[in-house]
Image (cartoon, rainbow, N blue to C red; front, side, top):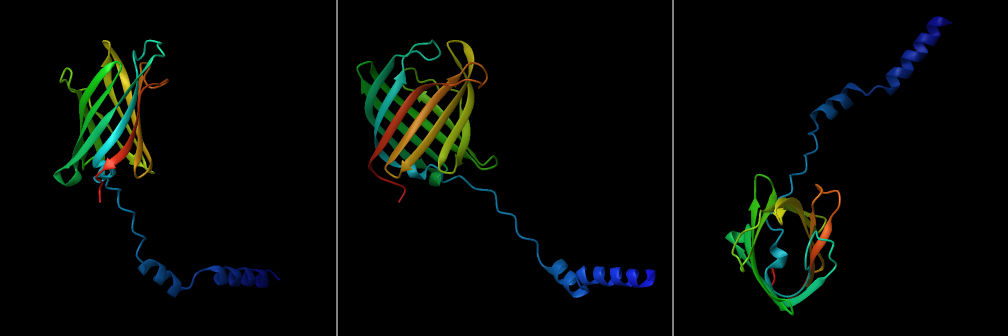
Length: 196
């Protein structure tokens, strides 16, 4: 009786075990290739051209103020070095005055991210850069800076629900990123140009 149980168990195990030929085929089959890391150096191509820009800017960020200022004008984006860099020229005006600025965006291949540098032409000083990239059609960038002499975190977001319309949002945090206060909202509508 014991011998027949052992023989039956052994036969069952052998039936479940892969044959030598199956094992050889499995070992010879190449492993599935890992997906290559995403290269984002063309992520800003969508923005090439001339845009009508509407801006809402918080008058006094991180002060508790709720006063918003409105501006309209244009943004012109020019690709540089085959799209691995670009320059965005902002020229908007409203009852509170003008804002003329430039953003230089540079792609870092080793980090597979973009670094954004901004300067308001009123004083010509570059802000501290922010870094990040695009995922699922949205851009998100972070960095450290100062505001009124105190350290802050900066967050900048880009979303283009349509090819001819994009929104931009900037927020500051003075508590290390626990709470964010939005201080810049811009909507761009394409006038001409494009990534083609």
